[in-house]
Image 1: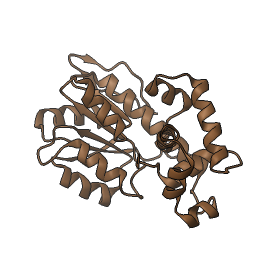
Image 2 (image 1 turned 90 degrees about the vertical axis):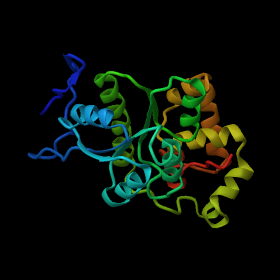
Image 3 (image 1 turned 180 degrees about the horizontal axis):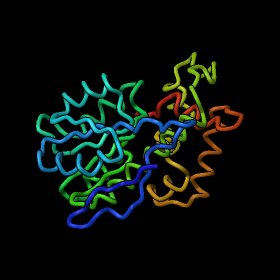
Length: 244
């Protein structure tokens, strides 16, 4: 098993971050990270921090990032909010609107510590929002956490069938969700689709875990779902609402 040997400032990163788990007698290939930024210094620094652990591909513009995402299918995207040709927000919107890419973990970073910017990024569907400068350890922990959740969902649930609930699928899921769920429930369903746990949702919305669990119960009942992980499977299959 290999561990991180990157440096944060003048000191080595102390976090023992392993490569992805081995399969049989062979190590699984490292996860692929797409780094998007027009800042040459940041690009160089992040590459040095990530390359001992991950397969890193880079883009200087959002347009290039979109092309690389379609061609190489990264496991996670790390994107500067202040990109040359447009904003990281626009890249995030483009990604979340693509059914085949909307579940990819997406981390935004910015040099401006402004609360509305952070809130905007999270509301658009970012999995994390980091304010630069931050340590290599912070960056690696954020990436590792999002990748672990992403891979766990894929491994646990397997391929998601399109017609989990035929009646809803036949009528158009978006229409049924808008008719059956409240705005709060629709937003929580969207968060579930992004892999957020009840604790994550509670922290983000400043409510109790019990309140989130009650919402999950009501959503499950209103959508007439049943069976293990039915709500998570439906949320992932639908891809969230993003309509309210």
